[in-house]
Image (cartoon, rainbow, N blue to C red; front, side):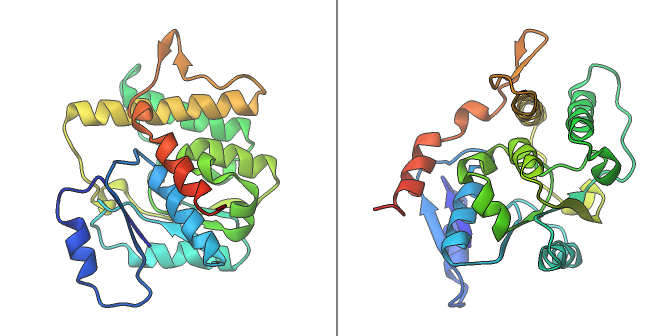
Length: 235
């Protein structure tokens, strides 16, 4: 399943050159926004009656097939959320840097979930991961577009969550982008963690951190387009 959204780089043409009847290409002229394609892909996989779904971002060009197989194996074994640990050693960053804030909030969320001993700072926000059909039946598809929230909902439902494999972040060979892209990405992840913490604590969802709203790419998430897609299965 390939979710091409707002692509202007030849992705659609390249995918169409593959001759495989299993390939399902869905093209959205508008951008769906960060992480929203996961919700779309998960819904498609669910309607295929798949027993699980494996997410891989299109800009990851590393050679990590073995890791993907480990993720799928854990779902076959009965796990519901199989994560990748991209930081086996928690990195040190200067205090108050965005990198340090990401580490802090990911660790805080996992501790609040009583999962830190199992996950460290692993998160569905980072790297390929796999979900079971049971999770897709439990967590609303919309919430898969805010990955830390899906983690909280899975934990609250008593689903089995763990780290299936580890790989250094650099080996994913993700697209790096410029400093502004990194800043917006960091703010997105931090804001997502803040929303998840609010949900866990029974508070209204908020992205505020010391009076600063951590938006990042969050405003670009196209909720209307996602909802229209999900609703199309009800007609």
